[in-house]
Image (cartoon, rainbow, N blue to C red; front, side):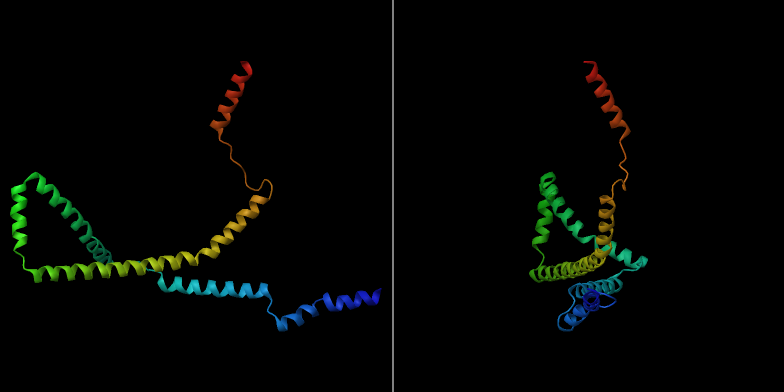
Length: 183
């Protein structure tokens, strides 16, 4: 019996597992491979986060961002203003539209190009900011998952999370029970 125990300890136990070590020569340890994969993903996300993190913006940049936000609301409110002015003072509106009819067609084309480039560039810039925000939030996924696991483990322990009772609700229930008992 002692010889069998020594042989099994040599193959499976002790400080080394000969069978596992031999198998890992031919096949990757799945758990270790998964951990390496997670480590690579975390490192990549941290790299993205560091690359795209925005530092404090200069006052000029903030002012220019504010100015860049004006054209769309101005055009939308201007169009609504045209409808209102057509109803309030049709003659005044007709005079303005007659003036617009005199604008040559190449100038309309130029206005279309300027507006298209403005909104196209703005769309691209906002799209890139959105991608940066996604990269930053994805980089925080491991911390969130770790926090959720900790909360679940606390929740499973009996009495680990104190349940605060609502004093007003407790008093109401006691009064309700007292009334029901008297009836």
